[in-house]
Structures are given as C-alpha cells and as structure tokens.
Length: 241
Image 1 (cartoon, rainbow, N blue to C red):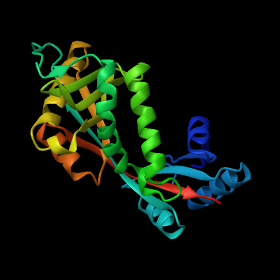
Image 2 (image 1 turned 90 degrees about the vertical axis):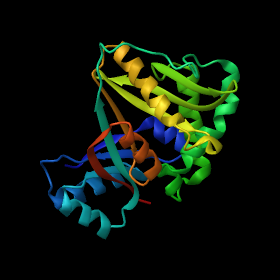
Image 3 (image 1 turned 120 degrees about the vertical axis):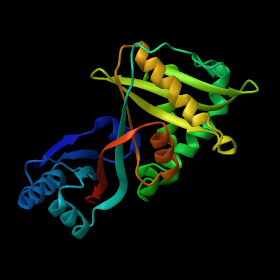
C-alpha cells in the first residue's frame, strides 16, 4: 500500500503533475493510504490515479469519505478463441490504415473520448479528453502503437475501426468505435470477430477488452460476442491541490 508511481507522459500531456497510487490487494491499512497521500503532496503531485477493486470495501469507503473523484467503473472482459480455427476475412473490413481514412475516423474517436474518465473529470474536461484520444488514435494509426488496425467500410467510406494490441501473450482490443449514424447495425460485432481472427492468426488463445462500466452499449456488444466479465474496479482521481 502507498506505492506512488510518477507518470511523466501524462504529466507532460495533461499539464498537471500526475501519479498513480498502486493499491495492493493484500494490504488494506488506511493509515498507509494516509501516508501515501502525504507522500504524494510532498512530491508535488497534483493528481493521483487510484484503482480500487470492488472487494476492498474499506478502501472504497475511505475514498468516498475523502473527496476522491469517482471517474470510472473499469470493466475487464475476456473471451477464449481457437487459434487453429480457419480464418475468413470480412470483405467490408480493410486490414491496413490507409492515409485517406484518417480524417473520416476522427469523429468516431471524438465519440469515444466523451465517455472517458478524463471527460468526466472537470479538471480535464471534454476538450482535453478529446485531445488525448486523438493522440492515442494517431499513434495507433501512424506509429505502430497497436499490432493491427482494422477499418470497417460502407460504400468505401470508413464507418468504424478497431485496434488489436498485444501484451504478455494476450490480445487486447485497445480501441473500438463505430460512427454514431451506423451504430446498431452489427458493425461493432463484425470488427470484434475480425480482431479475434487476427489474434488467432498470431497464436493467441484469449482476447481481452477493458471498457467503462457505464458504457452500457459497449458492454452489451461484447457480451453478445461471447465476452465474460473478469473483474470490475472503481477508478478515482484524487486531486491534492
């Protein structure tokens, strides 16, 4: 308990001194948490990211009583996949991020940013959340931040996209978005299936996704696609200034 990790990229991008409070499942001493907050103040950290498991009731009560700002219910879902299943490519999906798709996909990225924890924090707000998501998207599109970038086309126009990122031999759906006018038409499900096929072709047997618990539409899409909830945690921002 009480391990403070500085986050230099977040600090530079968001314009505030940012850190993360690493909360151990085994250590739940509230006095340790008091000391950690004091340590962060002495280190001139302005904002701490704090993730607490739903099982840690005492810590959740502490955060609620000490003006921690609730910004997200972080939900992790997973699905086993068969890496030897024959792969069938969807002819509506482009498997390369062609330059002329970039501008058309930006409005979809902006939709995603509206539901982020940064948008829900008034210290950052929608404008900063939008800027952050656009940078995340740009790095995925141009700089290889993800291993696969998939675009769904309707009449040769991009109306959805998904990215596959790998970590510790597990495939993660890092970003998934569909144009507002095209939602509810099975595009998200088609992208998920194609991402799974890409993950299977790389030899992975599991695909995971981390999404906001308040994003009911996204959760339903993943559940319909066969994903099961692994864990749910509460995400706070603790402002120290």
